[in-house]
Every structure is written in structure tokens, then in C-alpha cells.
Length: 100
Image (cartoon, rainbow, N blue to C red; front, side):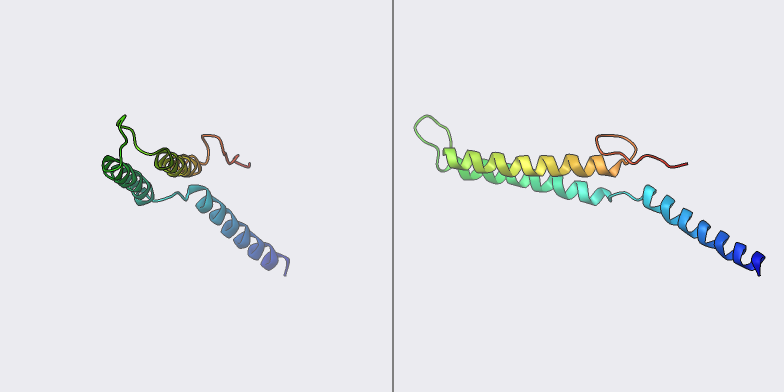
């Protein structure tokens, strides 16, 4: 009875350990980063082509368009860096400490 209980507990401990190691080893796929990079590139191209048609006499695009583009690009940049940092759980700003 006691040995059966110990064996079941040992199996449970092994399953929990395997799940913890699996969670630590999981990472975002490279497609995620390719998608964020391509969306950033498309938004740069769209901003440049759209602002070519509406430049003022000084040759600069409207202030509202520049602010909107800067905000959108900042969100992409922050999200990319946040995901990259979470993708490496033992380095960077947000870290997972290994338990012994």
C-alpha cells in the first residue's frame, strides 16, 4: 500500500517536472517575428507612398500623419522587443529563475 502510493507520487512528480521543463523550453515561432517585421515594413512603405501625394510646400508630410505613423511604429517596435525578450526566458529584462 505504501509502496504503491510512493510509486504513484513518483510518477506524478515526474509528470510535473516534465511539464515544468516543457514550459521553460517553449518559445515563440520564428514566423511570429517575421510577421511583425513584415507588418512594420508594409506600414513604412504605406506611409511613404501616402505622404508623397500630400506633402506641403516645404516637402514634409502632414503632422497628423507623422504622429500616427510614429505611434503605430512604436507599438510594433515595443511589441517586437517584448516578444523577443519573453522568447529568451533566462536573459533580458523579464527572466524566469530556475528552481532547484
